[in-house]
Length: 111
Length: 113
Image 1: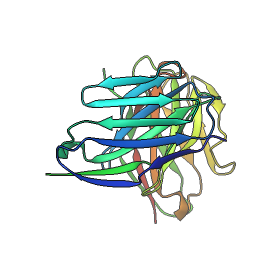
Image 2 (image 1 turned 30 degrees about the vertical axis):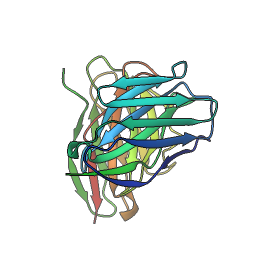
Image 3 (image 1 turned 90 degrees about the vertical axis):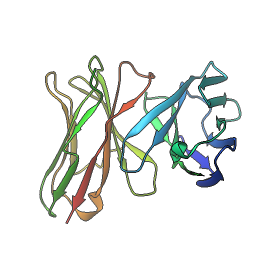
Image 4 (image 1 turned 60 degrees about the vertical axis):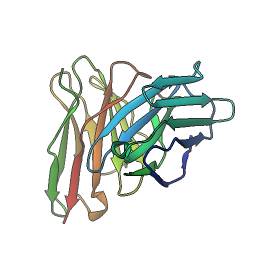
C-alpha cells in the first residue's frame, strides 16, 4: 500500500525567504503527483500536477520537482509572502486511479 | 463554470441518526472521489465512483457507510446510525478523467453529538 510522508510537519519562516517542502512515497509506480494548498476550514486548491514522465512543473513562484525512482518530490516556494501561509499537501496517484495524501506541511510566513 | 459543490457545509447529527452528504462535481466531470479528514491529519481515501458505478470503495467502512453517483443528480455519501467517531470533514473531489487534476469542494463538516 502506498504511504506518503511529508516533512516537516510545520514550518515558520520570515517573509521573503525561499523554502522547500518535502514529500516522499514508498511505491514508485505512480502515474502523477499533485501538490495542493489548504486554508483553514476550506477545501483543497490544486497548485501543480506533475505527470510521471515529467521532472518538474512551475507556476509563478512555485516549482515542484519529481524524482520517481527515489520516491521524492519537493515544492519550492520563492520569496515567500504572508499570503502563502496554509497547509500544503502532497498526493500521489498510483494503481487504482486514486490519490494517496500525505499529512501535510503547515506553513506560517511571518510579516 | 461552477466548481465542485458540496452541501450542507455543516451538518449536526445525534448518535444513531443518518447523515447524507451531497456532492455535485464540476460540469463535465464524471469521476468523483470522497475523502475524510480528521483534525491535523491528511485526507483518507474513502470511495471512487463514476456515473452509476462504484469503482473502488476500499477506504470505506463496510458497515453503515454507502455511496452512490446516479445518472442524474449529485453523488451522495450516506452514513447510517452515526457515532461520535464519524465526526470529521468530508471532502468530495472530481476530475474529467482518471489521473487528471482533482478539483475539491469546500467540504462538509459533520459533527455527531
